[in-house]
Amino acid sequence: GVKIATIGGGSSYTPELVEGFIKRYDELPLKELWLVDIEAGKEKLEIVGGLAKRMIEKAGLPIEVHLTLDRRAALKDADFVTTQFRVGLLDARAKDERIPLKYGVLGQETNGPGGLFKGLRTIPVILDICKDMEELCPDAWLINFTNPAGMITEAVLRYSTIKKVVGLCNVPIGMEMGIAKLLDVDHSRIRIDFAGLNHMVYGLDVYVDGESVKDQVINLLMDPNNSSFVKNIEGLGWEPAFIKALDVLACPYHMYYYKTREMVERDTDNAKKEGTRAEVVQKLETELFELYKDPDLAIKPPQLEKRGGAHYSDAAVRLITSIYTDKRDIQPVNTRNNGAIASIPNDSAVEVSCIITKDGPKPIVMGDLPVQVRGLVQQIKSFERVATEAAVTGDYNKAVLALTINPLSPSDTIAKEIVDEMLEAHKEFLPQF
Ligand code: NAD
Ligand code: G6P
Ligand code: MN
Image (cartoon, rainbow, N blue to C red; front, side, top):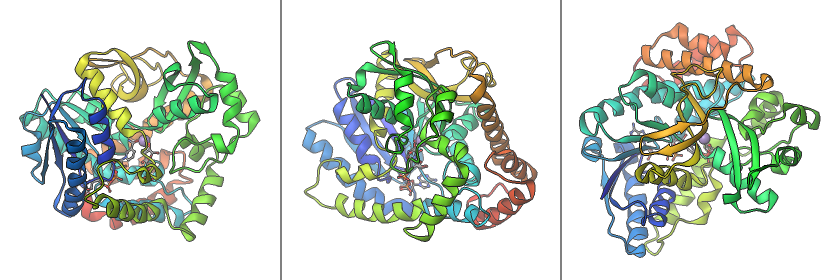
């Protein structure tokens, strides 16, 4: 039987994951699921763990669920380690979102200053997990969902000895499912050639039953109602002239780069009204955990779909199953480039369509990115690499450099001021600085 350890097991997404394991039990005979959290997440772990146990009991499957604060016990001899933790919890995310807005800069958990600081807080923890894995489960696969997922994959690949790492995001699968719905075809008939970075991924082409429908899909994306595929980003639509000439599918996160002013204005407005996304999610989470407590509830409640990470279980469990069964199907994941995208270093993480084998994802060679998107992808990769270096070394100058070269930053001086304020605000979670 398979042993899986899930770090950040108290996450409200855990029922999503458990639903995935139940659905694919025939292919993936899960024996032990270890949900790990920290003292601060103990109550959430118990509530969500209770629901996980009821879901499994209802399905009549012999899966053991262990709830623990002892990460080492959970990692011992695990086959897969999945990570979905949030260092500093949602309070830290709210700071990532609010502080940059004071400077007129985007406040978002995976882009710009917020993405940088979430990375600076998370990288020391993930590298520590890698050290434990090296000792306790050296053959396990690390499936990372923790954001910023691209930067975290980069850090593991380049600064740990763990090579069996895959970063996962629900945006590509969300785009596939959303486009299938727009075209009114089954998800299984759609294929998208994904290439780029996490939250900076493009669909180079899109096919139904192998025939390209790219132009039709690009036309559909212009409509604001069709321009976002995730709940946490409100689609603002695209200028027809721009999106047609771009000639590839943009992901919802591209709105932060190609509509920066509108997105900052919209987020500033939202922050004043309903609060930032973290503040909205805090309320949503309280509601969700109230539901999870109900001893009669034994399914994933539909309210979870209000969170941005919808379809996460499909993505995570189909990935684990394909590695376990050597399925060799195509899935978009974050992995070592190895030359698949010509304009990105070979040793860096990219988000790309891959063939999923027992030896992990084999990226499909995409060649060079089209000239109109190549520069932005390279710039974000430079940002991620410098940010990762800052996280590993605690080098203040590198942190300022990372933020300054980020396209969402208006100047070196503003970048420095934001870094100073955020270093102070998050100092409890930044032991390296
Ligand atoms: P959350 O705030 O519910 O945190 C999950 C759990 O992590 C909490 O129970 C918390 O106590 C625990 N935790 C915090 N620090 C920890 C540590 N050092 N070790 C172990 N556990 C720790 O978060 P969430 O909203 O469920 O999101 C979890 C993570 O997944 C975040 O990093 C988020 O950005 C990410 N996420 C990624 C995607 C994606 O597309 N890759 C989608 C949604 C969410
Ligand atoms: C998806 C992304 C995640 C992101 C999350 C936010 O868009 O792929 O990486 O962090 O949703 O969802 P939330 O509900 O927490 O705002
Ligand atoms: Mn994501």
